[in-house]
Image (tube, rainbow, N blue to C red; front, top):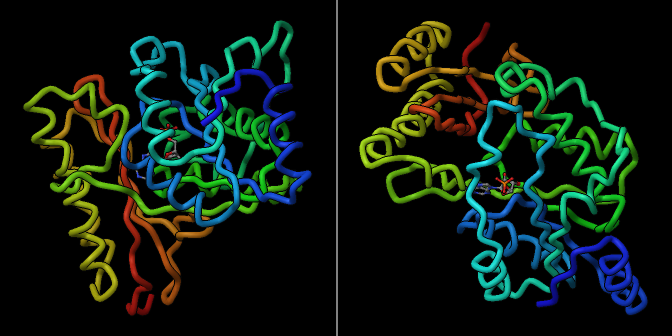
Length: 284
Ligand code: AMP
């Protein structure tokens, strides 16, 4: 696996591959890699001849009070994991390579970028959309792979690609979980033993409600108490919502796929998760 840190070297390598008609898949990450990221790489490898993984801890998607300074970083371990996963190229640019002095352009998505995550993290999706746009224009991949773990982000990226006529086809990969259901996340490293035991309760709740919703006569009743129940276990509930799986709109139409999404806090650690809900059979 080759590692490059500049846009010029990235483009030079890509030009060599394009000259051979190789197709290219990109997996954008912030590092602190785990098996969830590896599963995205595996998906990427089925989609194109060459796989690029980017590692960039993007300060523009963190608010000043968030965990940028403590976010786990270990480029050496990440590179070893990617090499073992047969990645062709690691792109690990410096901050100044991505955001040189005078950088003044942000990409702002509306629609799916409203509500949910944006309610607690209003800066977040402009940060994501800006770095993703830059990565896509720097590398022009045929395919880019994103995790369903960050479901709203996945829809925002799809919207962005469509609206700005960006090149890649967006492919999603399912959430990889611990045996007890907790979604793998770089932020799980922050949890102490007690918090780690509590953390899977978010997935248990989402999965339990998702199993009952499609055939429940009164979905609103089923959902009405969930926030309170989660609040008894977690330190804070940012949201727990049932949304259309494609538009994220609140109104759920029968016969359409939908999604339950939740975000909670344990101490300073924020956990997010989501699960699919089969089309409902209930009549409104
Ligand atoms: P991050 O490094 O957290 O920005 O994540 C990079 C990519 O990995 C995003 O597309 C995430 O949705 C995806 N990802 C994170 N956690 C998981 C997981 N547990 N399973 C599958 N994909 C994941």
